[in-house]
Image (tube, rainbow, N blue to C red):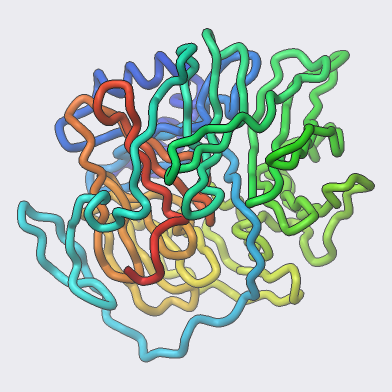
Amino acid sequence: MRTEDELVEALRSAAGRAPGADELLAGVARRRRRRTRRRVSALAAAAAVVVVAAGVRGVVWDPGGVDAVAPTSSAPRPTVTRTLAPPPTAEPRPTVTLTITARPTGSAPPGRSKVVPAEMLWPGAYFTMPARDADGWRRRPIMGIGAAEVLLFASGPGEKTGRLEVYDSVTGEIRAVTTPRTDGMTGALVQVAAADGENLVWTSYGEKDGTSLRQIWTAPLTGKAKLLATVSGLGSDIDMMQLDGDHVVWSERSRGGVWRMPLAGGTPRRLPGGDGLHLVDWPVAGDVAADPGPSVRNQTLIADLTRGTKAAVAVPPGAKGLRCGRTWCTGHDDKGGFLQRFDGTAVTRLDALGSSAQAPARDRFVYVRDGVYDIATGKVAVIDADDGAWFADGGAPGPGSILYWENERGTLGVLNLAAVPPAQ
């Protein structure tokens, strides 16, 4: 495995060389090794109006070192209301090692580990959709709004124009929601987006009169967009944004801190007890950004911002880049990747799978080299893209998490984790 300094330097170098969306995807396809796919971001593009500028998003770890470097994205997520409770009381279980072979066997809590094609394991969560519209605009899934609806970003020729859309995987219908405005900013990027069944929020980042600004916008899924707030300075570096009913909440990347604001408008309010914290999945927050990027700093606490409670994370010796959701954490050490509860119990080795350096999506799913490991069942949902193809995550490792990949010519295969039944 590479040293920490080598990894940091590699990631910084990758960020500096990040290409545009078309170049990125073409390059990934050319360099892809058989049965090993590079994950790219659904929100990656490099033009005047895009969803996310390319950069370093995360790392997939395996015993051989860095398996994939993916573009930066802040995690958009739908409305979530949950309370932070300790994990279920249980006797500590021994460490379990998962191994992938031609006919996989082995074990993982709570049942036998199995490798199954994603479309067979979760047929209700898998669908195909057109990769482009009739005018040739490229479509990228961003997040699952619910079991049937998916938020898309459609980009025009040269990635210079864009449109936010909703796709219904049951009917196959696509409806336009809004075209993000730059409002006089130059080099504007639509970097963060989140939606629930009623509303959509997003941010536009750029410069105006020589000052870097971030604008926060909202729109009903059936209505007109309006500008909520404009922020500058350190506060403009937003790493996470979510909807909470009729409010939007977000956190700052560089210095931490969580803010809340009504969708009807008003003054943003910094939440008490949120200083230095970063949203993980509202109301859960941690003391490091949910997406570690090149950082190997470990998360050491979990906070519930509605209850005002905090719980310590049990960080094992030698752990790096530990990231936790409400209950489960993933990290890596000199052996490879691992999974554990935040109290340090139920440790599972994921070395052979190449687990991702981010908190489990929906506190249940771990992105691995060729698909998704399900903590609830011990099964691996394999994304069986054709050789030479790519697969990507929509940039939302929370409740709206989604994966998509190059399928048959002109179509995308999509796995909406919001549609996976409980413990199936």
